[in-house]
Image 1: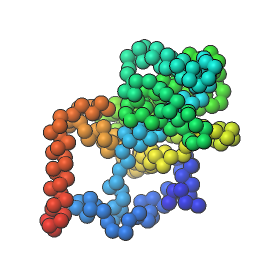
Image 2: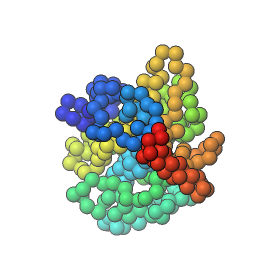
Image 3: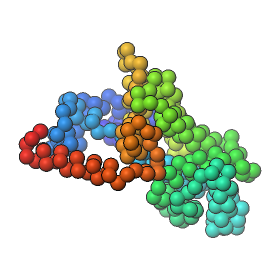
Image 4: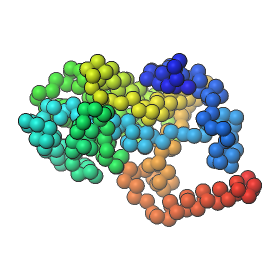
Length: 293
């Protein structure tokens, strides 16, 4: 029930009010049970089988809004007499960063359009298509804040941008380095970093509202990520728990890889694997249609 009058989803704490409306207390959003839930065994809490995809939630969601809004702010501190000239300066800094870190940007360069800086009448959001570009730009933010002499990294909003970007990196590095079942200390470290990202985002939302800036939009994917973190800390607190399921196992980047190998965001995968998955889904749909399951 997050997002309703009684339970705002903007509370990114560890014990938000909407928790009491989750699980069995959560009204299902459908009138008829989805096919996928009818074709597999499941408990009464059917919605628990629908998992958050961290890849699209972060790389193509939270990171895009965070990085685009932050780059709009950084743009004003670049050399130049207008935004077009400042964008040239920003891209020059970006190329230096890419060479130093040996990374590449699929969209090749930043523009006023793809960071949402062309108009102040709408919220800034990234319009690039590759999720890995979001990761690169999130890592670019602390670097560029550090190298710009005109930016006070300890002042608002820069301290929040720096803290949020670093927390995002630490959270996902921890999850990607961990096994499918994480020890409790590893799970807690990942969750702590995730909450640090959400708290930084909340501070940036507050700062933007106070200044009348259309930045750091409160998108639903923030809530999806919040759910994921809540699940981790609740799993850690269960009596007798020694390991916690890594949420990365439910992400697209993981399922598009070979068993036993670390998933790569570049999606280099044999065409046979996606075809096999499509055929299996078709077979499952046929089985449901003819009453075989």
